[in-house]
Amino acid sequence: MASQSTATKPVKNVVILISGRGSNMEVFLEASRQGMLDGTIVRVISNRPDAQGIDTAKRRGIATAVIDHKTFDTREAFDAALAAEVASADPDVVVLAGFMRILTPVFIDRFLGKLVNIHPSLLPKYAGLNTHQRAIDAGDAEAGATVHYVTNELDGGPAILQARVKIDDLDTAETLASKVLEVEHRIFPEAVNWHLQGRVLHAELGAYLDGELLPPGGASWDPCSASSA
Ligand code: GAR
Image (tube, rainbow, N blue to C red; front, side):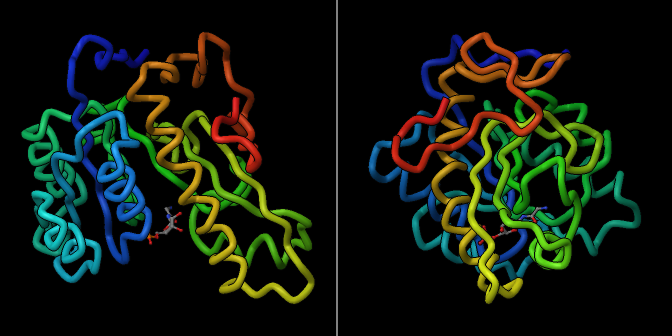
């Protein structure tokens, strides 16, 4: 069972991992600027030197680091270096915001219970890549995004919060991706705030919100309300 060690610290440290554009990361930076994040963004780390999000974070005065996965011989060696960098920032939560590397137990086991990812599908449907095209090809009426704790099962950790969007007849993978991205930007900081507030935690049986075990898809996001439980 992962422990929730964030409860007693006065200021909670948020580390964000990215691989590319960083639009979700920007939403966290903006929430922080507006005093709407229950923690301090202490570092943004990319596995790609050319990630657009790294430039954005630097411009906003956030400490950044690049650990280029291409310079390591094995996934485990990369994960050990990434874990050392993350640990040096003393995180209360590690936010995987479009971080596109599969992580091994070398990294995951060290931060279990503090790792929160967003995935662009209605998990448990469509773990992995090409989620939008797969939902369209299956004739699904809805797609969406899921914020979940990370375990060693790819995109299989306990869900915290999920938002749905309608798939229209004319949707392509691109149009659907941008509809889903809009809801990602709404649910991701909300779910991470729940974690920072100690409202949600990762335990052996799954994710608990306010002491209640969440269902497999997590809590359902209600677009009409700021809070979704
Ligand atoms: C987001 O759609 C996120 O859900 C997805 O990558 C995109 C990153 O966008 N993540 C995954 O697919 C993880 N498996 P961003 O860099 O603009 O935040």
